[in-house]
Amino acid sequence: MNTPAEPVNISTDRSLTRAQRQKMPVALDVAVEIAKANGVCIRPIVLRRLDVRTGRSEDVNVPCGATQEAKCPPCAKRNRYLRMAQCREGWHLEAEPVAEPDEADEQQRWLIEFRADVQAQRDAAERDGDTAEIASWDEAIAEIDAEITAAGMRGNLSGREVSRRSRSTRRRQDAPDLPKRAMSPTTLGRAFTGTDGAVYRPSMFITLTLPSYGRIRAGQGVPVDPASYDYQRAARDALHFSKLVDRFVQNLRRVAGYDVQYFATVEPQKRLAPHLHMAIRGTLPRAEIKAIAAATYHQVWWPAADEVRFAGDHLPVWTPRAELPDGAAYPDGQDGDYLDPETGEVLPTWDEALDQLDQDDEAEPLHVIRFGDQVDVQGVLAGTPDADQCIRYLSKYLTKSLGESLDADDAARRDHAARLVEALRYEPCSPVCPNWLRYGVQPKGAKAGMAPGRCRGKAHKPEHLGYAGRRVLVSRKWSNKTLAEHRRDRRTWVLEALGLADEPVDPHRYVWKPVPAGDGTVPSLALRLLRMVADRQRWRATLLARQAEATGQDPSAIETIGRAA
Ligand SMILES: [Zn+2]
Ligand SMILES: [Zn+2]
Image 1 (cartoon, rainbow, N blue to C red):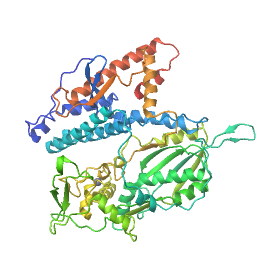
Image 2 (cartoon, rainbow, N blue to C red; image 1 turned 90 degrees about the horizontal axis):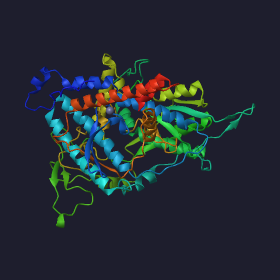
Image 3 (cartoon, rainbow, N blue to C red; image 1 turned 135 degrees about the vertical axis):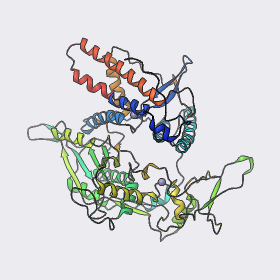
């Protein structure tokens, strides 16, 4: 392949007006299309890799899919293959997996994921040519980068700071009324011996759904009567869905009496509510699963958010606090407070609001979430067509975001989605959500410049529809491998096929650092994409050539693995 000429990065050229930019051929869009056609990541993150052995540093394009959740279609597709392999591997294990405690770089991984997320937002702003947006994302990126650097320098981390507050929620989560079996220290389900002497290890595939918020038009996924459809409940259920899933797993383990392992995916229903498909190792009576689902609930012990206290022009005002001697920081990390614009009264901070909630015996949870009546339980045997079908089903929507299933031509569903997004707009998505100001509470770690309705949290975005959690939930002892290890497997396979050594990399050899946003040495996104395409094509051509030399290799298998690597 010829080396492409460096395209003009018109989307960052600020000397042009937006109108001028729109008239020019869109070089970046072309590069994106070429990258997509070649299965190359279209949202690579640039990281600077310093080789401590040679002292040389190099910028590396890390595919967004290398983080937990892929942000671009090619990476999502590749990750889907890996997920299917992971799901298959753990479902019917016959021996206990070896647990490898690898929490050391958890924070760094979390930061890199978060960084990728923010980078994706910045890229989108760049494509829109929205300079104000770009600047504010750059600011966020700079902050995260500082944290990544700090995390790297600290090396071994014991994890993020644990909140001092866990007592109230723990005290108030009532235990559901369910049978409880003595725990046995196994992650495997029971084995059964058939009359023919064969041993079976039956497993389960279950689907859990949220309750009804109003009648839905059959086949269309839109409310019969939008006016009476409970959008607020739908919004809050979506926001807290992952907590409900956690509770379900806790209850499941308690009832089952062993360390039940699962591989689950969260997918959108047609009515745009999240629901859960879960492959479970081992089996329980169907009636018990239904009883567990019915008894499971989660209470959200957050301050009340039903009475609007500040809206429109009537918003709390930020006032800096007095400086502490020797530049000491306030224990809550804030250097100011939000005040009632009329009375000057300081609004309660997040911790103060939770303390009030603790002391109030009459207090009700902000929200209680439960599953709906529709619970589907299926028994599955290893290696059967049923099992394969379930695995395909589990990964079916992984390449799509929750809100992406919307058909652009379907006005009724678009309206339905818009109403849900509107309901989510002022719902607090987390303790740090600026929406708390609307209800008279300072968000946790409040900062200047916050305004209700302008939270940048994922949950409020149309493509997430309230669910900001992970799409794939895999318990720690599902298989012997993490997704990264599955990825490494594929890599090893490819390197072997290429006749290259897959040397174990000394974890201390490289120091990774983010590249500062304004760094002039990084080529444009378009150029980086084209280079990655060239690399991939070269790599694939070599792989196929080797494959042709070799005997007894199935070319289609090589193609598949090449794509997944
Ligand atoms: Zn990607
Ligand atoms: Zn929010």
